[in-house]
Image 1 (cartoon, each protein chain N blue to C red):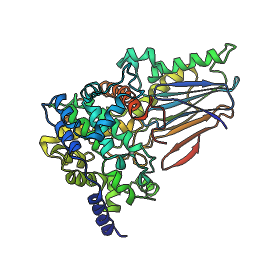
Image 2: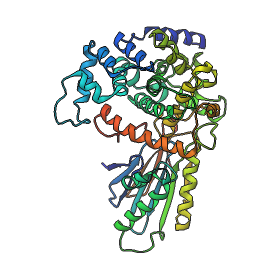
Image 3: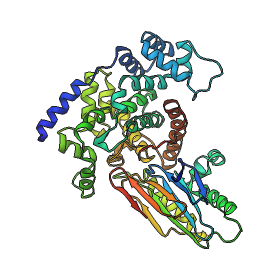
Image 4: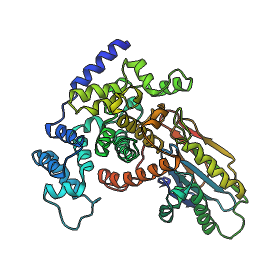
Length: 165
Length: 296
């Protein structure tokens, strides 16, 4: 049976173990970014909660993954460390994102899901890692699991069952 | 059953819910009073043997990692603080409603309790942003109780989650509560309100429960509190801890701005604070820092 690695809010995981599944639960307005580095068969998943670390710099040291602006760099650093030999990580990297749900009739303040998605894209694009697939927005809370061996990403929600992205 | 028959059945089910103990009722009442001390809490708790035992069990649990065993209830209550004591009391008193699997919301056992606890924590923090004073302890208690009605109506909503979801996508209902009303004649907020009246909960609580999705309908004097609970519920859902099929399926009433001052950065800080506090408290209720599914 596959080993499952659970990623909590503001956490990230990187794995090269083909038997492993990386899973994160109930994203709400949070966003999961999944990195599939094909040349080295390395998979990373991060559960980002908020767009900017400036609201609480002291959290960054313990949990950089909490924020879009610090989390992406933290997980890529770990992926680079694991997926040596060095080289451009962007080459052969496939990035997918899921989550970023919104509240119905939201205003700008409560628009965190949308702001998370935008913040992440602004960081990913200049790195040449713009998401090729996204399943974001709407009013559903998504659970995400990625099989490291196959790169298969399955999303689920209480009423919609399971689907792949 | 047609809608009228269902409504009668739900109202009867509310009447059949066991009453809470007088100690718990008094504890809830006390948390709503602006001036009260920890000694008064101890005085209530120490005459309820079951509650005393549960509080000692929690304070001596691994999550608190004390060097020495705590035997005195006075010491235990002062270590845990009022909110934790109220939380433990409610999970004891209404555990059957909070903890059961809610088929009517496609929610696993414990999902509602997690949502209520997160809403309670959020309510206490958001209370600090109210434009006029809102008692943080009272907000916590209201947050804990706001979805009490789901434990009752869920039994009458079996096999509805997917149908409601589809109807919501087709914009047949403005929100999930409206769908509940269309099926049952009343929604979970009203069911919780009726139950809170049966339990003789102190004045602000029934209104906070009844109007947490329609805060504009609350009495003017209670609107700061009710909007606090309204936002706290939404913050909990945004953080991924909704009950189940209804997560994020409610409207945000932006008139909250008249009662609660929250900038984007402040809301982000609130969400961060809620997450940190929740992971601490969840450890007490579930034995370790939460990493279990919040809602699958």
